[in-house]
Amino acid sequence: MLTENELKKELEALAEKKFKPSDNKTAEKLVPAMLTHIGSPDPELRDSLIYSAFASWVMRYDVLSIETLRNTFKTLLDDKHLLFGFGETKTDSIFTRSFSALWLPPILIKHRQSAFLSSKDILDAHRKLTKFLREEKDRRGFVEGKGWAHAAAHAGDALDDLAQCPEIGAEELRKMLPVIRETMSMTEFVYAHGEDERMVTPVLAVIQRDLLPSDEIKIWLESFVAPVKETKTMPDGVILRANIQNFLQSLYFRLKWADANSALLPAIENTLREINIFA
Image (cartoon, rainbow, N blue to C red; front, side, top):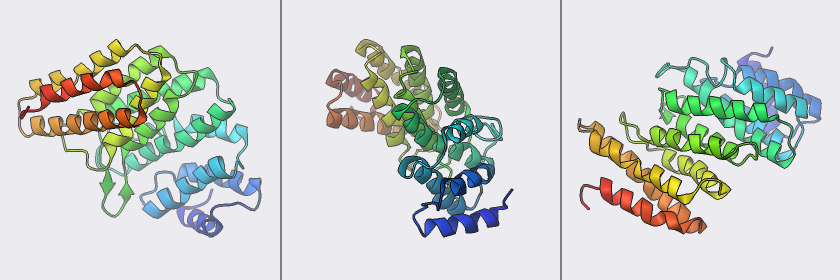
């Protein structure tokens, strides 16, 4: 197995060619080492090289075999990747968890183009991603000297592509919504790195699947009010209100711009009015 330094040199050479490998075997042989070092605290290796190479090989060059994609998908969801060090806070294990989530979208996009994952694989991803979002303790965005942790944003990206998979039905979409609400109901700090927009995207995917009735989504929107009104301690209440307002305002305009289910816009306005202390 390549060390981090050896892998970095290999990928730096490929980066000069926009990650285009000389042949398929070059990419295939590097994937195991990339999975091993997926959570390196070196931001250049983790993000600019490992992630960028993998995304390029899947989406741009199509050089990885179906077997490799299938095995990689399952590996990303295991206890050494998406759930590695689960429950820890402010440790480097977050990079492994978060970037395991970020690797899922290219595979899911490829799967939607030509199905190669089983329904069991997709439902397993749904179960583990929602667990990750609900229970992840480390919600840091950018970590000085180590780059993006961004667990909520990366999981939001994965949830978006998962929500678009035909194997995901109304029941699974329904379960995503409260998890998204809980994710945005952060009281430790105000999300400041685009997490609200990244989490709005899977909500739009859920809405656009048109499998859940509008009345059900309206009830979900109304459910944001109670946590804000019930949180009296400070500064928790102010932080919670800010996170939810930012999220709902983003959702409002993204829905409006996408011209998607405009019947939900008044419900979002009503919820925002309920939680706004100046309204």
